[in-house]
Structures are given as C-alpha cells and as structure tokens.
Length: 390
Image (cartoon, rainbow, N blue to C red; front, top):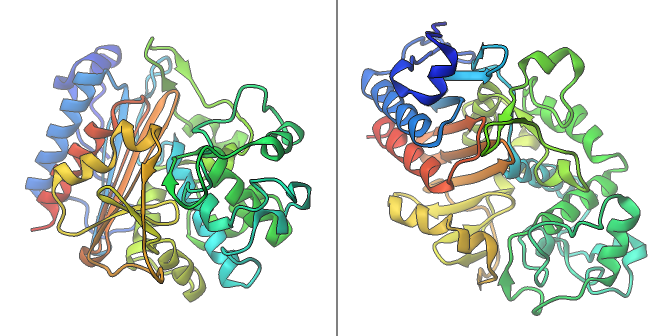
C-alpha cells in the first residue's frame, strides 16, 4: 500500500500532494487500468481542493475485482492516513441496510409490507401513523413526515408520543416526502417483527450474512483507532451524535472495503446465501416514479444507460426537502438489471455515495470525512464509472 504523507496539514488544502493507493481485499489484481486510476486521481484532487476535504476513500468493483484509492487523512490531529479499512459514517446510506433487514423479515413471513404500523405497535392504534402501511413508511409516502424529528423527541417515549399526535399534511400514498422518521419507523418495526433490537439484528445477522466484518452501528472500542473523525464547515473534528432511530436512518459506520463487499453482494459477484441474495434483490423493487427516479427500498434507481443530468435531477435539494408528486407502479417487482442504483448519505462531518449497475456487475463507493454537495459526489462517480464501463 502506498501513502505519500507530505506535510499532512497542507495536504488538506492542496490537491498537489495526493497519491492514490490500490490494495484490493477481495481481488487478485493489485492495479486498476491506468485510465481509471487517472480519473480517480483527478476527481479526488478536484473534490479535496474545492471542499477542503481532509480524507477520501474510493472503492470500485468491476466483475468481482476490487480496487481502492485512498487520499489524505482520517484524523488530522494524529496524522492518520485514510485506508480502505478506515471507518466512515454512512449517513443515509444506512437506510439501505434497514431496507435489507425488512426485506429479509418479509421473506421469512415475519411481516407484510401491506400491514399497518399499528399491527406491530399497538400503542399507535387509532392514530394516522398507526393506519399507515409499512411500505408507505419505507418509501416516504406516509403523508408528510418531516426530514428530522422535532427537537423535543429525545427517547422512545417521546418518539411514540410524537407519532401518536402527528397529523399528515396530505393523504398517504400521494406524495414523496423524504424522511428519517418515516423509514426509521419502518426499520424499527422490522426489528420488532423479528423479536430483537435493530442494532442486535444488524450486527449479529445482516452484516455477518453480507460478509461485512468492519461495519457497525456502534464502533467497538477495539476499532476506534480506525474510526475517522469527520470535519464540519469550521474545520472542527466531529462524529455523529446518537438520536432516536438513528441506526435505522443514518447511524451505520463502514469502510470502503466493506462497502465494496456490499456492492458485490448486490450485483452478484460476492457469495451470499440464496436467502440474502433474494432479500437484496427485493430492495430493488420499484414502487413509484418521482421525477427522474424510481423509488425502491432505501435505494433510488434509474434506467441504464443514464445521463449525468438525470442523476443530478434525482438528487437535488428539492427532491430531498420538498413533497414531490409520485406515479405509483402497478404490481411492484424487482427491476431488471439494466439500472443505475444509488444512495447518498451525510452526517455533520461525513459525506457518502454508493452507486452500482447490476447489468455491468460494477459499482463504486466514495467515502469522505467532510460533508460536501451531493451533486459533486455524483459527478465524480459518474466520471469514474464511465471510464470503467465502456
């Protein structure tokens, strides 16, 4: 593995000191084709210089071969370089894991996405949210749940009280309003249906079944040295603060190597059980169209080939912050392999992007320890995958 440290604090501000590192964990090939390496170097330099990103990791998988490129610092104070085993916060990419858990629960017959929320949380019986279906919670169509919980919601009791008194802004199933409390409740109910806590199920069942050994809800003490610090707009070192339903909506932490493994499980180049393979495939079920995107479980999808402008249009602030009209899909089913599947994620100090193309058996993860615009992540990933898929 190669790292050029130079003056480490200067590295944060200057892309001239960048050096790529390719040290595959799942691959027998140590060096990616030069055109791909050049594009990754260019995109890393551009992003780090423009947004003062201390450290960034790229993981690319092509037909079962993985390549890693690591730049900058995971911890500025301690001069620790980024590697493919550096742990980053995934933000809302965590939602795809909640979707996987729920998909597996439905496969086992433990729940039905057509059930009402109150079937699993009787305390919500008679409330608007209690009458909402699980699939509406999963796909942000419950009727206008907000992006975040209000400040007074600080624990399980205040969460339930909030849900009991919440009133929809529009009829359920009519608009998309991207929401942590919406898919967070979906993940919580999936765990209830399986009779264990969400964190326990994630760390003892789902992640091991995916072969993800360095992915956590709570990073254990033994791995804290690998856990990057995020950096906010003021350059202060930060990490995510636990909140209500955080694990379900934005609380997973992972590495580039593990996220490549996750992509490979989704595109079929990493071996997982038939049951897990089916659960993953079902997360790519299309439930409705909203603007350019098709909403799956956690994932957002586009017909492939896809233009950069289409991807950017599906990831605008308007799509995240505003209620958007939807066009339901009759008889939802997993989409064919000719799709671009993606998800962005952010916390106060981190920015993540994952995209993969099942038909090409190719995908990319970009993990950074600073939050920067979604559009810039997508531009970088698109340029790199364009070089990889010809």
